Image (cartoon, rainbow, N blue to C red):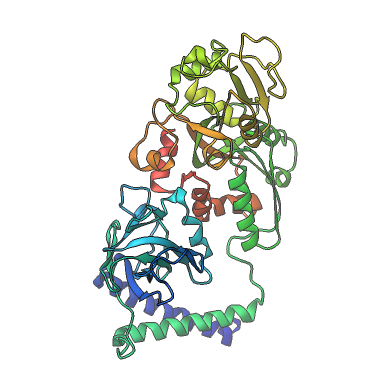
Length: 514
């Protein structure tokens, strides 16, 4: 019989071995508690050497400046997930922005370098001041950000210290939900490595044989199997300019994993993207499935033919020219007075502000960022000041504010930075590192993603990012595959741009409420 071929017999036998091994593993898992666990160990704690004498000028060691390092020491600290489960960003229980803190007893920190093994380059994106990473000058505490670690993943910190003695106490402080943070140690040269139990050896052997045989069968049948869930073809992603950097990175990661896919990101504004998608009425199903549109907030223009899926909670902010001192922030009432046209000069709003023309740098009518601003900040009202300038120049009626409309978030930020007396709005992450602008608090609250996600901040200027499709994308289409990739594998990319994925537990609630 055809089904009794040697290949099928091997496959069925292998499957049976795998089933038995899986049953044993289930029994093992039910009797052995699983815990999330972060371990840390000091792999090196050495004096720098005799070349570093007190009173000498600054000496550079690698990337460190080392002034007066008579008592200088180098510590290499390894931090690893040595538990049985992966650790995510939400698993850290710290109330601070950072997840963990290293305390060096009686020693001061002068520099730190982060390293990680090959294949875990994604960990480095978390080591930024925006994530809480850093230390205070002459302090003894090193703040470590919330780093997601798969089982067995680790990173190392090389820390330059002064004062204190080699071997002084080093502690890692912090907590993990349903887990522990504890010191551990590597095997010493004289230590004998621990042996597997007999049951563990049997399970390991059976699973190894099963995997090897199944892999051999797969290789024999298809030398070039496609990645799971990947689809080829061409997809155009249009819409939001504020969310475009996220989509561009998601498309780049998808194309890296799925060869043969062509994803083109064309950000034209939320409403323009939704309109372009809706204009595909009358086209073939294949053509309609070749486009996605991202919108900041639900689009009022979307018809019944379009379906919306929440992707992320986005946080936005008012931005002002850096020379305009709005460090006290603005109340919602003051913002509404500005955008109604009631205030022509800043000192009319607050006598402590300069006698300078108010310049309202806005977005065009296709902008979802503008729509959320009107809904959440202006209480549903349209901006009352008509467009008075195409390029935000200060000509015209000098008793009224200047208002201009631009095509993208990047244009708004550049114009606000270059124009005295200017105020505008932007997606938070794009505005954070923009030179020449300052973020403006609303009702006493600065835009803060972590405070919104974890502390229930009432900050108002935020909204849900939606992905629109023409009907439900057919199974096997690139649109369906890409959305599935965003939903299940895009959380790290979305978070790296300062958004909260709707697919997380906290994000799902926030996206539903907004």
